[in-house]
Amino acid sequence: MRLLEIIQRSSSFLEERGVELPRLQVEWILAHVLRVPRLQLYLQFERDIADPELGAIREAVRRRGRREPLQHVLGTAVFCGLEFGVGPEALVPRPETEMLAERAWQWLGNLPRSEIPPRVLDWGTGTGCLAVTLAVRVPRAVVVAIDVSAAAAALARRNAARHGVEARVRVVEGSGCEALAEGEKFDLVVSNPPYIPSGEIAGLEPEVREHDPHLALDGGPDGLDLYRRLASELGPRLLPGGVVVLEFGDGQAAAVSGLLGQEGWIVGELHRDYSGRERFLLARRAD
Ligand SMILES: C[S@@+](CC[C@H](N)C(=O)[O-])C[C@H]1O[C@@H](n2cnc3c(N)ncnc32)[C@H](O)[C@@H]1O
Image (spheres, rainbow, N blue to C red):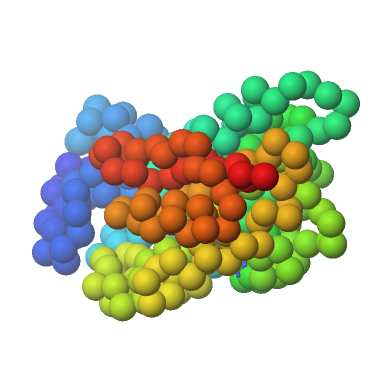
């Protein structure tokens, strides 16, 4: 079958199943299976595609038509220019979290240099995208990445190895700071905790509600359960001068800032995502 015909038929198939940007999705699948840059496809419309590629393309398009996320179908997602293994074990890294990562590595880069490497905690690491990116970007940093999900922790370990930073990213399976050694403290804590109100999960797109782990989404009745926990358990974990950088959901800025304020935090910065919505903050201890 000609490449252009595959693009047209598959795009219609995905469109009928409610997939957004169907043609672009098909192009990403083709680029992946045929191992060519996506734009190269435009120079190959007349190329004849046969098995085994044709079979692989059909299977991938079918999976996408069942509303599996594109990244699950491809097996990888790009975060801050780095490729991460993804799958049902953990949340697919989101573009807005890249901005949090960037602010975090800038903050680490501004620390006065000392003999002691900066210590970073990634609370709820998922794929390990934040932990691994910070370790790659800040080669002096030593990172602890926690996740309560054993499957996510295993995936984060594989992603750390994929980028050659496994010696500086210690992945710990356990619930929040309970998983840490007593007295273990950090210069920087980053977290993108689950923050969807439980009652809103059923209304999310199938790609999210059926394929991202529930543990990565559910923030309790008002979406703020994990912020309550972070506000109380992170204070004793910060080294002097340390900060936390937290992502939150659209519309949660005031509530999360309020919770932190009640627990003795000062919110120093509020940052917006690419659509102009407040999406993450930087806070330090008031004392
Ligand atoms: C929204 S996902 C974020 C994953 C990743 N940091 C990212 O930004 O893509 C939240 C993660 O927190 C983890 N998590 C939920 N409750 C936790 C807890 N009590 N302790 C540690 N991790 C937890 C989930 O398993 C999930 O991997």
